[in-house]
Image (cartoon, rainbow, N blue to C red; front, side, top):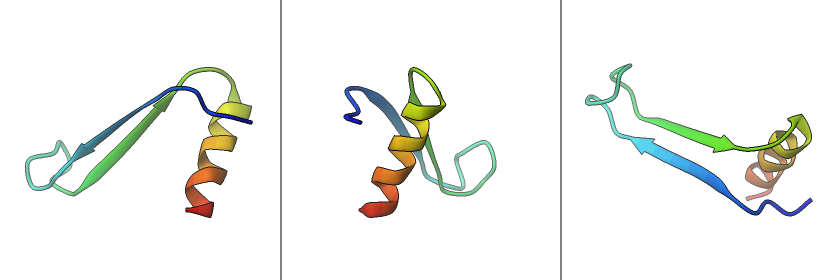
Length: 44
């Protein structure tokens, strides 16, 4: 399943809300889109 758009935010600690390095991945669509994105990240 091709992923056409996603928003990736990287926040370096200690200036993030948790104080740790954080990466957020925002996708649109269903759980299938989210699962496909996670599979693609696992293959990288």
